Each structure stands twice: as C-alpha cells, then as structure tokens.
Length: 141
Image 1 (cartoon, rainbow, N blue to C red):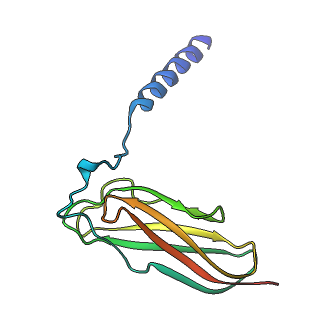
Image 2: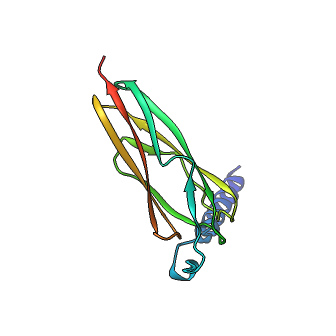
C-alpha cells in the first residue's frame, strides 16, 4: 500500500510541474494590435438598466458582444469598478471576426438609492479600454 501512495505522490508532483509551465492565455502586446484593422467590439447593450430592486437583491445580467472587425479580438482582462460586482468570466481565447461572446456579471445590492457601476474591458481594440454599465434603483424594505 505504501508503494502505491509514493507512486501517487510522484505522479501528482509531475503533473503539477508540467501544468505549471503551460500558459494558454495570450497577453495583449503591440504586435497583436493591427492599427489599420483593429477588432471592433460591439455590445448589444452597453448600459443595463435593472429598473428597481429590493435591498439585498442580486442583479444578474450577461453582456453579449460581437467582433465586427476584420481581425481576432483578444480580451486581456475584465474588471469590475467595485467589490459589489462579480464577473463570472469572459472569453479567454480569440474571438474571430463575426463571432459573439458573453460577459456575465452579478451585482449585489447593499445600499439604497440610485446606483451606477461600471465594468472595464481591456482588449486589442482601439481604444484599448471599453466600459459597460449596470444601473438602477435599490429600494429599502
């Protein structure tokens, strides 16, 4: 039994070392930006208005976009403007011309009143940073 345990630990170590060296993400560098034909990031909605929700509610929305450019779109990062907005992911691989993608978000409401929060997207577009907004009114109970 002890030999199986040792073999298992060695296999785990080898797999861990190999997977550590694999990097599937592409960093956006100047050579990936085509100044003559940059990707064009177009969203169905750049501002999502959730109208009115109760205090403590979670607002979920998925921003849908399309690459209307002639070159592949590479999204380097998507960041929320505050801790109350959680990003559920975004395409980590190139989005080819004509293809669509999604950026799902969840907003947690902790204060009453009108709120407007933003999400920043860094990509190989021109300009490199794009912003999306989620806004609405949070009513107290």
